[in-house]
Image (cartoon, rainbow, N blue to C red):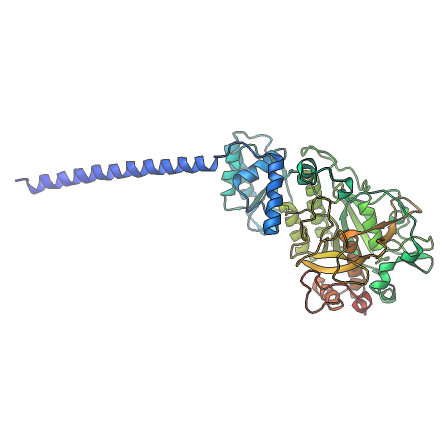
Length: 508
């Protein structure tokens, strides 16, 4: 018979061995699980090609209506980072605004530490750190780094920062070899058809669309004086003095134009040094003209808000925000305009077919400063006809504008986009096919400009007229007055928002 004491130690010893076996067994299984997880995450070791990435993006937009890096796999995001010079953009913290995150420096340091750990290096990792936004640009080469970062709770987004979707689409897309017109650029000058304008005192040409929106009569109440519009585009022509030294001219007296450049003209993300404010595309010049070209006796087209001030930004080389320096330039322009207390309105007739985190942060930052933001709803290139309203126009912080045909409010122009995110429309396409008369890139010459771009610039000018008439109003009051003066108010149209604005009604 076994004594109680021996039995006790026997059972205790066996329990100890059983416990040890349990820990060994579970530890082995845990290791196996971790190893299997790692193997699962890195099953695709080679990056996708640019063609494969674009095909996936296009397919997602066609089936779901929108593409998002956040909803993409680690391997897909890493592939795009790999194909984009290894540059990634990271948004972190609980807010886009550094001032709203007291521990932003700590979080940023933690992110960089993780990158250093997985990349196995400490140099040439941080490309830039935004002073206003919780956003950094970094160099990432390994897929493991992407996987680790996307697991961090303090990261809002991790995206490729230099992936050239449009460039790759031109190379590999089914509608490849698209024309350069997709850039929105052009330096043409065209004599205006007499039926496309009305002569107003002292001798200026008011575009045909002004009568359609009752803008000429609205000038009896407001001309935009005292309101400053920020323009984010390709800059303004140094050859057009009416948007330079003669901006403050004729009946457009007592105002200013300020020109800024935040675009780095280089294919290499590490390059620095802005290349100035001068438009090298032509698009920005047209937008500034449509908004606020002076009213004088030179026989040239006049802008909607001919007494408004302009603060222009050359933020990109053309209208498709493709690549690091263009997206970075737009982000910087939004934050600087957000911090400019004299600016009330921001207009941008550029965009992308999917969201860009750093630009989204910039838009939210400017909006948080009380700015009224207008963005183009989209103008089709030869390979984006399947896209609806573009980014950032679809954001709730912006007013999305599209162009419609003459005498309509729900027939988009031949190249314009429409959709549920549209807020207002502007008549900019005639039955003849002619669009809006504007100042040319060169002195003493004229041109036409169309698409949702000019619709956006013109609507920003309308907002300036309303705000100048009511200088004490808030952004929301101005916006509500514009809505109340539109054809579909109070119920938005499914694809055209509140429709065309009666500007005379808006300023009375």
